[in-house]
Every structure is written in C-alpha cells, then in structure tokens.
Length: 360
Image (cartoon, rainbow, N blue to C red; front, top):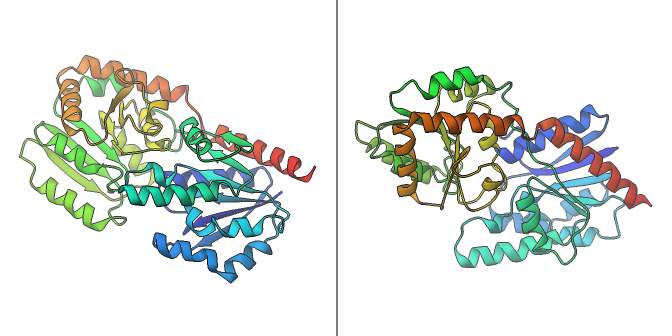
C-alpha cells in the first residue's frame, strides 16, 4: 500500500510528535508499505491559515497518487478548508494523526476559542483518527459530530535501548548527596522549565535541563537568567538535545525526571525515563496520568505549582528509601508498558483495515 504523510518541516525534528511519526513510518516501510512525505514549510499560525487558499497545495493533494493519506493534526490550520474541497474528488481516505490538540494548551481565551473552532472544523473533514492516548481520543471525540474509525496506538518507551538493572537503581537511589533532577523537553512555556528552576531555588539539588532553546528564544533567555540567579546550594545546567547514546548516559545518573507541562497528549519522556528507574513528575492536565500513578511511580502536580514540586523534591531528597520504592515502581511500569513495535503494528493493522473498508 502506498501511504502519504503530510507534516510541517522535517521528519528528523527532535520532539515527541516527530519521533512518533518517524517510528511509524519506519515500521510501515518495514512491512512493505511505501510512504511518501508531503512537507509543508513551518510558518506562523496566520500564514498556515492562508495555505487553504493555495491552488498549488490543493492541486498537489488532488493529484496525489496514494492509497491513503495521513495528516499530522499539527497541520490542521493549513488543511481545514482544503480537506472539505477534497471530499468526493480523491480516491483515498484521510486520516488525522493526533498527538494533542492545540486548543488543549494554555492560551488566552480568545486564542483558544479560535483554535477550537478551526480544529473542530478540521477534525470533521477526515475519515479516521490515529491517537497517541485515550485522553487524546476522548478530547477528539468531544469535537466531532460523529466519531469515525480510530485507533489508540500508544508510543513506546524503548527508543533508548534496554533498561538499567534493579541493582543499578538501588545503588543510585541510596548513594546520598544532592538529588539529581532532569528536565527533558524543549525550553518552552508549555513545558514549564521555569517551574522546575523555581522549585529548585531553595533545595540542594543538581538540575539538568535537556532541550532545544530555539522554539521560544525569549522564554529560554528568561530561564537562563533564573538559573544564573540560583543560590550556590542549587546547581543547574542546560544541555542542547542529545543523541540516544548521550541521553542514555545522562539519564542513568539521574534520580527523578520532571516535566510539569501545562498539557501533554501522552508524554513519551515519562516512559523513557522510567526505563532508567526515574520516577516522573507531570501534571494533572492531559494524559500524564495514563503513565504516572501519583505516589507510586511518580507524582502529579497542578500546572505551575512550583511550591508543591519543591515539597515533593525535598521529601525524596530526604527519604531515599521512598525514592528507591518509586524508582523500582517506575521500572516496572516501563517493563509492562507499550513498545514502538506494538505502536507500529497497531497503526499498520488499522490503516490496512480502513483502506479495505473504504474500497468496499
């Protein structure tokens, strides 16, 4: 089967959504499918809306020779009108690959209102959904008048290789010294790096933030300024995105992973960190609770609650036996969690079944 995948930019972009897309493509190709990437340039939201008036883009999609077209839902502003114009004129079904909805993020009320209207219009132009979590599917369902065929294909946590041993986790948790905390994600407002830095300001911890500073440079500079103002007892550093081997080396030395995003459609890094026995801290908004069980393998806080985060980190720094229990529970969660191969098989089976239904 020949499949099209429409995305913004490059499939090599290092974020959770693009990692998912890339893994999905690799699995489909390994099963004998052909995948054609249709890339649209990254621009701002208003300029993406103008794509709907592009005769070139419309003609390209009308003449696309594929059996099925997957559209990353991130591209919804470029497609919500064009998709309607394709109805009845193309021979392929259109599937939305939804990592999370833009309108689920924290925005001013007027912006969320706009995003919600446009995403609702887009989601009602497609023939099916691939969602990365049950939370995402439930949110999508609330936008649609009739839920078409769909699959929840959870991301895997095994991108970085085999997990570390329980013995290594025990030695690390009980070694003493400063609590080692890692933040893994782009340095953006949604990921809330400043909340982690603020929580660290009164604690003797070693904080490592790993992520790109390019998406929101002004915000990244704010975080750097906060780090430079930390007291001597709290140390922090920012590293650019690392390759898999480098990241594995850093994560193996940490005690806990903190990513208190305002919203996550799944949060691949929570599961990846658990392969290294790292309890994960996420928030109560979004799908973090599908991986993190509060007080067992990690912690859930309200978005923006740096005081609660500081209290949790202080408790774990002082109670290493508690840290060990949560670390071992995190490893067990990883071991029983989804793999990328399972994700690929779920998507592959869904696409082929949907294509057969479309042809009948």
